Length: 79
Image (cartoon, rainbow, N blue to C red; front, side):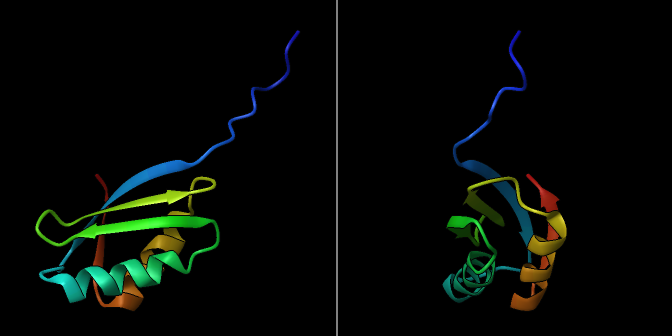
């Protein structure tokens, strides 16, 4: 019998962030989220309000919310 399947590899999560309107906003949100342990890539798009995060493992939503708050925006949830 096989035990639990190991799910290794990057995890991609898309979040909705309200209030971003320009490249500076994208940079602020990306910079804060990129400081979360395990994050390898962050792409924020102001026109859609979507932030795509690639990480080594699923991220704690509270950590992402805190990072977005620190940047001065509001996490609306996952897309």
